[in-house]
Image (tube, rainbow, N blue to C red; front, side):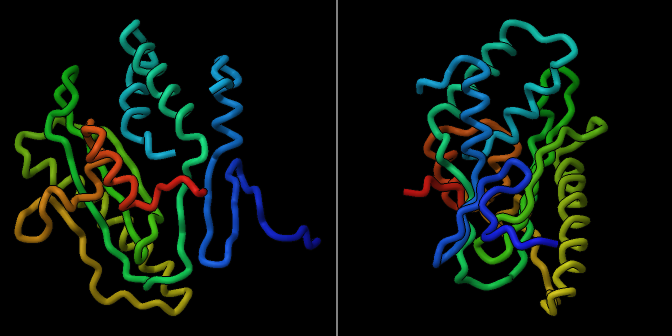
Length: 211
C-alpha cells in the first residue's frame, strides 16, 4: 500500500478535511451532469423526488420529463451544497422514521423514509415505496419503523467495534408524545414540502454550502 496523501476524492465524492470538521459533496459529479444536459452555465437532498420519478422509467410521460428537468434546475442552483460532519459533538445514535400514507396515486402504496443521526451528523438515510398496500396509517408507520429499527441495530453493532456502547437508542416516529411533526427530520424523505420547511430540514441534517 502506498501513501497518496490526504483523502480529497473517493468514489465520486469530494472530501474537504478542515480543522473543525469534514465536508463531503458531489460538486464535480453535479457539474458533469449539468454539462451532459447542456446546463453548465448556470446538494440538498433529492432522495424523495428522484425516487418518485424513477417509478415511471418504464413508461415516462411529458409530466415526468418536466419533473426531471425541475430536479436538474434545482441541482444547478446548489452545486456547492454538501454534508457537514463536525468534529465536535457526541456519538448518540438516534433514528427517525416517517411515512406518507397512500402517497402514490397510481397504486395507493405508501412511502417509508428513515434517517439516522450520530450526534449531529447524518450517517444514513433512505426513501422507499412500500411493497404492499397498507390498510391503515398505523400499519404504514409500523412498516417504516421496522426498517429504521433494522438499520439502527446494524449500526449499533458497528459502533461496538469502536468501543461505543449504545444501551438505549431512541427511534423517533410521528407521535406527539415522542416527537412533534415539526421536529421529524425524516419528513424530507417521504413527501413534498414547502420551501421554508425543506430548507429548515436541510440545515438540521447538516446539508450546507461551505463558504
